[in-house]
Length: 113
Length: 117
Image 1 (cartoon, chains in turn purple, red):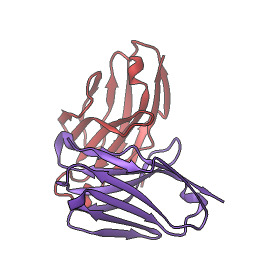
Image 2 (cartoon, chains in turn purple, red; image 1 turned 90 degrees about the vertical axis):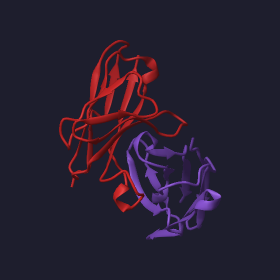
Image 3 (cartoon, helix red, strand yellow; image 1 turned 180 degrees about the horizontal axis):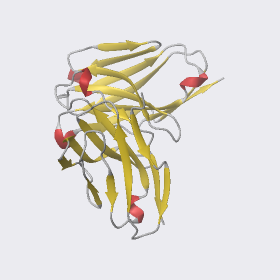
Image 4 (cartoon, chains in turn purple, brown; image 1 turned 30 degrees about the horizontal axis):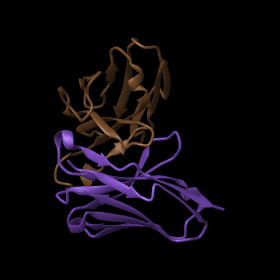
């Protein structure tokens, strides 16, 4: 059964710093990996989707990488801002049907002004 | 573009009561999903649907029922509410579920926070 782990569980950094969030998964046979942002009391917002054949995806100050063979993905946030404060979730798509998306528990990120 | 809309946003139920969580999407997506999120845990799949009239169980289906009469709507029914069903419920949709391409990107609603007392 696929398992997804996110490290660290929480992170607090000063504004302006570059930072990396980590995601690891146990079964490398994945279709894709998706990074989400969740604000308190809100839904999930899709940030980036990396297909299994891709190595990285970029959107603005966000860059996500994927190393399928080692079961790892990173989300790089450049020049962090207080508005980046949220919980970041990693989800792995391992197949259709009941497999659905397997989520990590998230990294709670606080950017200090 | 509204995306995925869930109602209600909050609800308190007494043990044994029943309710329906509503979910509708306007993206013409074939696939719809219900997840629950418990504190400190990853989201768990309750039920999913591959199209109107077709539903199937996810990882944690016990105590829930679903139906899919139209492409747009995917309601989740709790028949006999129990304290263990206290959670935040998310509905999601995607155009596809297979192949891993961009069309499998999942879009989520704002969630329903349910408390059973």
